[in-house]
Length: 441
Image (cartoon, rainbow, N blue to C red; front, side, top):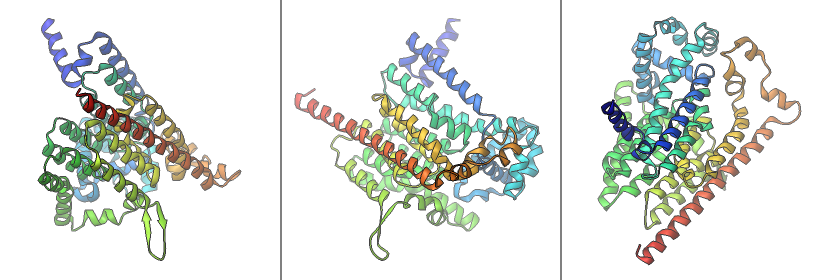
């Protein structure tokens, strides 16, 4: 018995943290938050989804059944992960094979209707989302090793904030998007950076960029944080872009298509430059790129580039993106772990994420039926298909675009306020460091 207890204690130290595992009260709270968070996830997992979940697994089915590896060449690694998982799932759960015709149907509307009215809809939704559940749990265990060594109280606070975070739960288990995969690899890169494994950290972040483009936003910050010599900048920049270059080369050779130029010409890149100031003739200034440049330059100017500053600047990058650019709801997930790091010391940051989510729930109207009433279609597809959507209802009393943009503006104000609070946090840390230097502590 004592050997088994010792074994599980060692496992707990590895996956949870020794600060929590070695403290009985902290360990009890950990189990309480963990089981509560799991219950919430299982509660939502079988029921809700947005059309993109079906599209993702349709591409995976095309790869598994038809051998079309390039069914999603822009997100090749993501598609491979889903394809492998889909192959394993249909082996373990033979009923998934009955969905072959639905998944291979090219008519998006017909395939969606057939999918939501199928007999096993709740079961297959749970199976499809379980992949995200695995990465979700993996993320929090990386975060536990990443943040606040030696402080069980702060680690538990961040653990609780993640397990009951409305953005995490919505993106993964209601909206059902796969950004958690790229985010997990990104967090691994930051864990390596914390341990000063600089080249490995940048290499892993390069893989994250190849999985999902968003980590490239924090690549310059990570390189500046890790670089010790001038040559480090060149080496790490080359490593950091290697994932994207590798995907570009594979895509061009295998499919005759360019990933980079495809992304640059896609609407998703236009989101980054959607907010702009018109000057004269063809001259215009892209607001997010201006603010992003200022942020990078301010990070370069810092004398003591601590891990605190690394986390806070990454939080500001993603908050400024959703504040100043057009975005899809799942993009907000990228800010969560970095904001939660700040929330470990400033509780109000977590509550502001709830405020963000509250206003985001109204901004959902932007995307119409797909992200409002159709989220519930698995319960009764006929009822929710013919149920009036929010836009016609709002239009009876007020212009829907103005209505949504009022709340979008408040969402931006809240996000910018969070950036300002992080700025004040950084200023406080800077003063503490300067005082420590003067006193010799």
